Image (cartoon, rainbow, N blue to C red):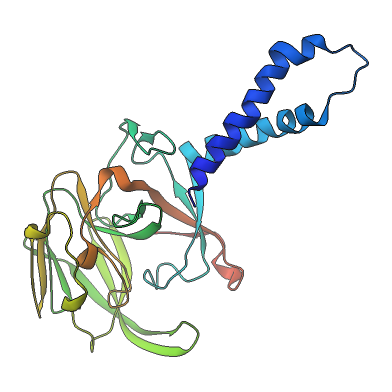
Length: 267
């Protein structure tokens, strides 16, 4: 469901009635006439829809985390807020950038339209920016030939789909100015080779059983989940083009199952 398109259509519909009432119907009514319901309702809803549309399109948008691919940074059931202007002002519905404010940086947690199905929103961490060479060998990340520093943290365990108890190793990964925790299942391969799709610029990548090496093309980004062995990300479906960017996640505003997460910043 394209919620932005639905909001836009509602805005046009109610705004049309508001304009007609202002220019035509209001002038024809006598002071003591009752406003017809088919005018009153759209006119009343128009300012509310306008405010929501502007806030959601240009300032901040809420999302819900549906999967565990960003554990331990984000948990299933987290409701998050996404900054819509950090990476530039974009026209709603068509998502075309009209004002360039900034670009994603390595380590940002970013929401974007899934390249294989743009009607679906994904959230991952930016690992590679345009021109970067990203390597992942034996569970260690290298960017442009430099091994990314990691520090061991206490092991991390969680329930997957409420049934499977998963135990993992946890590390503090220092990616530029974004130190963040990742979890790794040492028994899983760095990449499931059978799951790699044919994607645009696939020739930029080399895969083997130890991992992969990819050069990020211009205007694209390489994304990975913090739950490295339980994430469908750029390893499998490729690079995220700039036109698919939605915004940068910055805050957990609600989790009905874990109220202590309210107000947690997203690093």
